[in-house]
Length: 289
Image 1 (cartoon, one colour):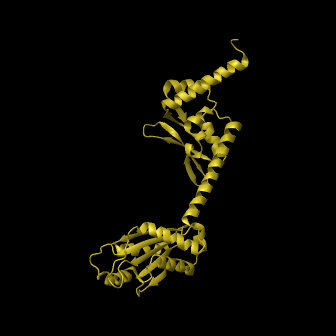
Image 2 (cartoon, helix red, strand yellow; image 1 turned 180 degrees about the vertical axis):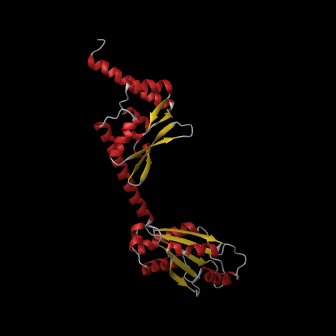
Image 3 (cartoon, rainbow, N blue to C red; image 1 turned 90 degrees about the vertical axis):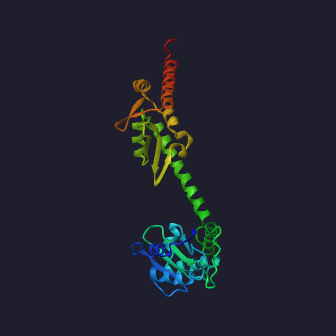
């Protein structure tokens, strides 16, 4: 679960967002409040806040976001308990507070507003409130056996590593089995294996590299594996001699139906690969010996 917090001055506007009907909002917790609308609650906050005119950012705004999977399991009563525990850990159980849940998106989350001014007129210390919010959210997550930020990050990292490995294996399979002769063939072969290869082209119409889209991820080639940078992919290609000569002369190539400029570094890589292949052919056939 992720916890975020800050002090704000625009109480009415923020609370109106929290209680937006279009976001399927629902009040799951309220303490020391009688009102039910943003305007009524804001007015009740204001009565207490008038005791401390020096404090301008006099409302605390929090967002509590369980993971998507945890959110699917949490009912209103469990969300209420989660919110109450968070308020207790933040030492805000004696302050006015209201919490709304948003269910309009796959990622359920709770908007919590607490009056920064106590009934005694003292302003709550908001030093490092963002960091403390996260720490207390993690503590509550452990209490309720929910996924903590660290666990979610580790899970995401593991999933990303697995997806990288899958993309790399598909790339290696395409290179061995299909032996593409240019980037167009490579892109088509990868797409047949559900990997979309998207050329990165800058404003000067120069090819910069490739991005790989697979199962909801979007990664640069070098992020997938160092062997999948544009230059490394080029060294694995079987470019035809005529194409290499044209690229070397014109410094551009045809890619997905359009002419794109080719960086000098890539031109050198392709040319060097072509020369090596030519030398290999000579050696293998014995020509010139």
